[in-house]
View 1 (spheres, rainbow, N blue to C red):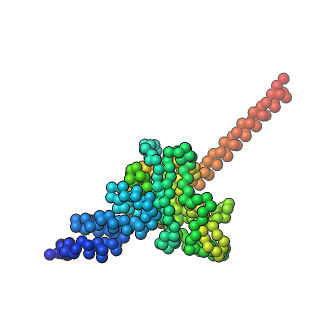
View 2 (cartoon, rainbow, N blue to C red):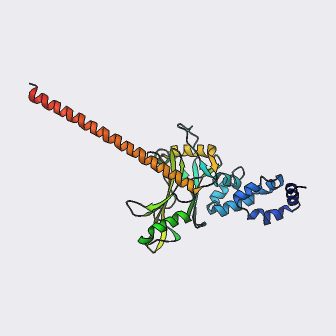
Amino acid sequence: MDATSFSSSDITTLHPDIIRSHILNRLDGPTLASASSATLHLRRLCTDHNLWRTICAASWPSLNQPHASSLIDTFPAAHRSVFSDSFPSIQYSPPPHPNPPQLPPEFVSAVDLYYKGRPVFSRVITTETHKGWFLSSPLWVELLDPNEVVPTPLIFAKCDEESSWLAHLEENLGLSWIVIDPTRKRAVNLSSRRPVAARRHWLTGDLEVIFAVTMETVQWVIRVTCCGKAGGAMHVREASLTMEDTEGRHVTGRDSFVILQDAMENGERRKPDPEEAKARFDKFCRLKREIRERKLRRDSVMDTVAMLVSFTIFVSLFWFMVFGF
């Protein structure tokens, strides 16, 4: 008997409760998914709902909140469906003219902020999609209330330590922003998991930590704005989700959700790669700069032509008035 048949027959001799309680519940999501493809016996055990509920709760504490939990229970495979949708990163290129889907009455955001892999803040919010501001205005989903601040275990660095501190934030701060479509029973994670940039805002001086998912011609951007004094505690003051195109314009709520729903259905799920996400973000930002510079050069040329035409007309009129009679 070869090693494969021995291991297969050996594991079937164990009681299922022993396998669940002493083996499977110690695995993370990707490992559990891999184990389910080993044998038919393991596949039946690995689809246990409680296993996936525990894994989702450990990965994203926000999904424990009643509204999110009751919503997930309506999915075809409950928490296993959400994990398979939300754990991978999404790769997607929007078609030029996507078919407008039927918007759900609302979509749900489950957000978790981490420091060194440990959750420091979790929240579930609902965004209504049938209101006029959502349909025609730029998409802007705000996580926190206007005067709310969220404490963190971090300490604001002093000025002479800022560059190393920003690098520390990019390495140790994490965020997950799962958007759930209650109608289609699909979900997607719109965060790069680790920051793609951490910098001071050019105008306010506030610290901005940016997470992003690039989809070729558009980009989902999550901005986490932090406040505090050097040497004091750092607090999160704002956290928002937006979508922008390659010209730097914010996309409307309706158009954003058209792209989002198509990405949920047709996007490619891959293993999360923060370095790739950062590279794609940098490439998108370079493209935005190039388009803006081309536009500025074109506008400058048009302004010059307009001035020359105006000057020519003025000189012609002046010549006609002085010498034309």
